[in-house]
Amino acid sequence: MSEVAETWVDTWMAKLVNYDYKHFIRLVIIVGGYLLLRNIASRELAKKQLAAQVEKDKRDKEEKRSKDLIDKPDDAATAETTSFGWGKKTRRRVKRQQELFENALEEAKRRNQGLDPDSDADIEELLEE
Image (tube, rainbow, N blue to C red):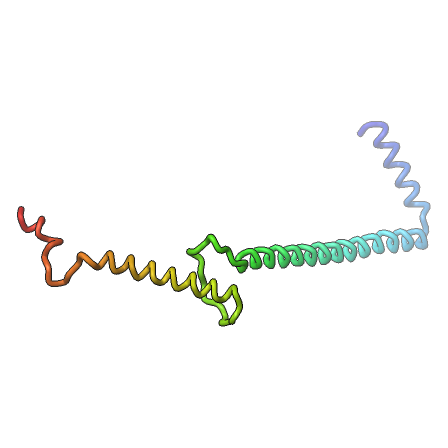
């Protein structure tokens, strides 16, 4: 070891030898109290941080939910069934749902219009070969 390290070790050994049991008890109480308070403080800070994160997540979820629930008149594809009411929003929503239903019905008719189960028009080109 170097001379500085030896001096340091000798100094600390001399101090430890000169301590009586009262000094050791005092040292143990101070170190133990520090460790105890440190653990308690870190646990409480973790609880506060978790509570703040949960609150933030709730706020974000509510904001997202409120954005999803707000009626968007230009967005006709997102009409959903909701509770029945008599207000202006409900009448608009019902009208939009009826329009979507009619559009879907017309599209289904167009798809099925050329497909008669008795006609072989769809397989005629395959039969010619």
